[in-house]
Image 1 (cartoon, rainbow, N blue to C red):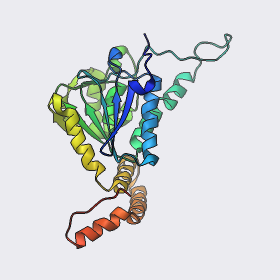
Image 2: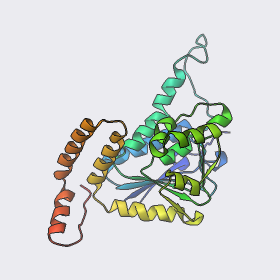
Image 3: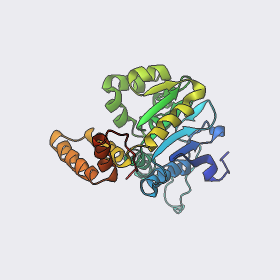
Image 4: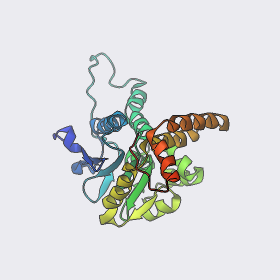
Length: 275
């Protein structure tokens, strides 16, 4: 049965202390994401780049068992093709992936504000990658990450084959993908997938502390730092040298860069404006 609630109730957006809180709230499907819910997260993240209402973001979920269990496989697509066209055409799946989950991860990795995942329960498939693509990951001590693809006879997707090797290396990525074992939060922390493990009941508070700290920081510097680090995963040294020079040039024109130098010279704490 599909969720008939308004989309804004299934993926909630709330602003607190210059932090955008994005909360997945679909308990009837273990917080799995339908395409409309997935696209709402994408649109929220893209909107943060220009609204300047928030200077940090947290992605979390309602309840205490599930963060996100991936794509809602019960969702059906409403096609307007005629009855003479086959139900499935080569290229349909590719286009839906590019326009769907890959567009979400483009928005997440390209979001100007720092994004924290507050993983309050099981994160599986695309849900695990949604958390791991965030800039910082805080997991509750009851949380676990599950690469479910082998269990279903599927190929890992949702950018996992790109993301995981760059975080934990090829050997551990293959272990997760092929052996298909649940990865508890503590082991995920040992692997380097998680920045911090917090007590189950304190994971959102821990995320709030980090997010509010980031929201008080030099936001343009953070945005350019994210841009450099994400590009470094695929760029050669000469390209990175050029990109680094561009980032430093852009940042040197910000009010916060001037404030940082002034605060250092005057031996006082900086007062960041976010621009």
